[in-house]
Length: 249
Image 1 (spheres, rainbow, N blue to C red):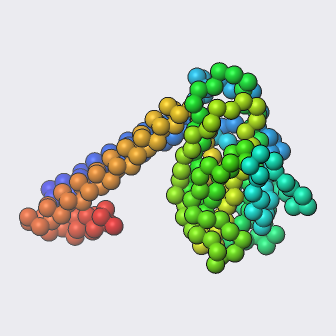
Image 2: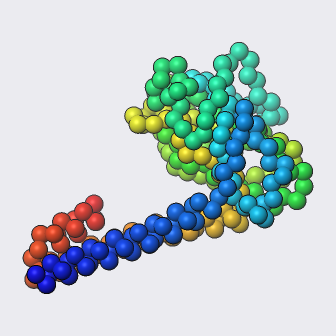
């Protein structure tokens, strides 16, 4: 009976520590401010980075389904006869896709009207996107994950998040995101929002997130090893072994 109480206390303490770490992580992640775009335009002329250092870019983005449109180096965006929809970000692109499928390719675009002066160094954070993406800012390819393409045999899948520093910029940021998915059967498109913020604040958020995930991993490993030790030194309780194996997996 005492052994079972110890096992229950161990599991309870483990869950409590995970909950504390998780709630702290969520609190840090939610310190960003959501700003809503309308009809593909986001007005940030009144943005004060000192008060709101990280912005989450949600709302209505232009979306060109089944088209990969590359802006020219001078920043122009040749729409031509391409059909355009307004996609609500974050969200799957199934509603905008002609076939209603999660598979396919498309181009997102958002024009951000920036403050005229007083901006510190800025950074854009692109989340992991199923299953490839390429980010252009004012006509320049800034970064990509994988290789978006119009056909599955010519694209490369990768959903690794990335960050880019923005050059000093006044006026309007023209953000274009190409994405293609031929692997993920669950979701496609910009299902997590892009973030814009000061370099210092974005770095702090990144390293805290990395540290929180490392802390959770270490806690899980420590409790798994502890449970295994208890099991093999005499407390041959199956819940200990199951708990340890599930933690490692």
